[in-house]
Each structure stands twice: as C-alpha cells, then as structure tokens.
Image 1 (cartoon, helix red, strand yellow):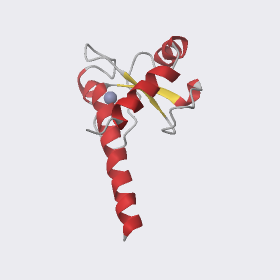
Image 2 (cartoon, protein in one colour; image 1 turned 90 degrees about the vertical axis):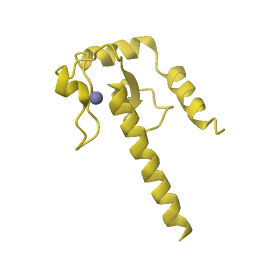
Image 3 (cartoon, protein in one colour; image 1 turned 120 degrees about the vertical axis):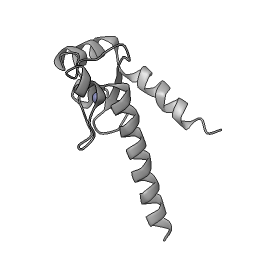
Image 4 (cartoon, helix red, strand yellow; image 1 turned 135 degrees about the vertical axis):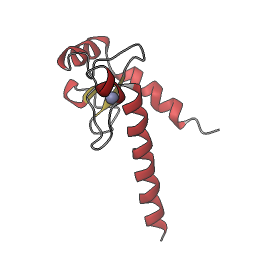
Length: 101
Ligand SMILES: [Zn+2]
C-alpha cells in the first residue's frame, strides 16, 4: 500500500502549531471555510457552517504543507476536506495523463 497519504497527514500535524490552529478557528468563527466552489458544504446547510460533532480539519491554501503562515491555513469540515483532496487527486491524475500523451 502507498503510504504517501499518511506522510502527508503527519506533515500537516507537524507544521501547524496549536496557537495557529486556535487563531484560524477564531478568525473563521468556528465555521467551515467552504473552499470548493459549487460544492454544498453539508454543515453550511444544516448547522449554519459552524463545526459540529464531526469536527474539523486544517488545510493549506497553496497546498504547500511547509508554508505554515496563518494566512496559508484554513479550517474546513471533514466533508469539504475529503472532497477537496479528491478533486486535487483527480486534477493531478489528469495532468499526469496529459503529460504522457
Ligand atoms: Zn465544509
């Protein structure tokens, strides 16, 4: 099995400090950043965007896990996080396919 995903998760935890996490959550008023145009964030439909018991994840605006500046970090609900990663993977696969043509 490919462990790249686990490495990626570990690197996120490594680079965002607890102070930055708290800052980001307060900046967003404990609500999902809704980073995907056209995707209806489930908690925005049911809970006004405020994080519920499903929790939240932190992600990077520019996808660079080593840029831990608070302006590069936002908090999203688990659904938006998964969809964003899935979209990013699809885009990457498409780019790789195009390169081999
Ligand atoms: Zn969301």
